[in-house]
Image 1 (cartoon, rainbow, N blue to C red):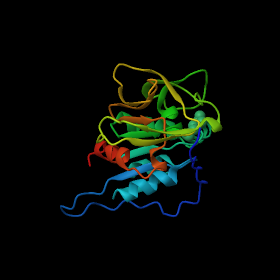
Image 2 (cartoon, rainbow, N blue to C red):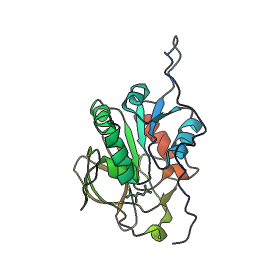
Image 3 (cartoon, helix red, strand yellow):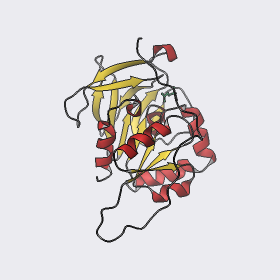
Length: 221
Ligand code: GLN
């Protein structure tokens, strides 16, 4: 389909540093610290969006990085690569623990695959935290990537321009999962279950911060 398909950034070139935790002073409201899993994929773009909204972006590469964060984003990229690196660095257990104590987690595209309870037809390391079944690359190959406007519940009614890049399809949702956005054929494009938020598209690759704002509200902002 027509439309510009942005590329992922290379890892390791992030033009910002990992901040060190600074104790909150006096009555000043603490800045929300959003961890961004920085193994591979579109983490730089998520960090830019988070900083634009006045929150702090903390790159997460090791379990100890999670100690500093109020919320966590799992970016798009290649879920197989990200999952293997998460397993190698002990992040599968650490992130599952964070989710269990209520830390809000937002998975976009590959991040959604990593959060899903089941990845259809595939055994790959993933978190398995959210009651959805996803199928990888189900819209087709890279050339079948597309952009479209969506209505997202929880946001104001203006359409959200959504970029799908070799996106997964949500095949099933559990009864506690709220569907926030769907394609015209009914395919789920964004959903939430408690502290877990997912989108099969890439909100960080557009100029529209509303879904990230929604996520920051989940983190108590
Ligand atoms: N195709 C990728 C996967 O299966 C997801 C693509 C993306 O994150 N844009 O992991």
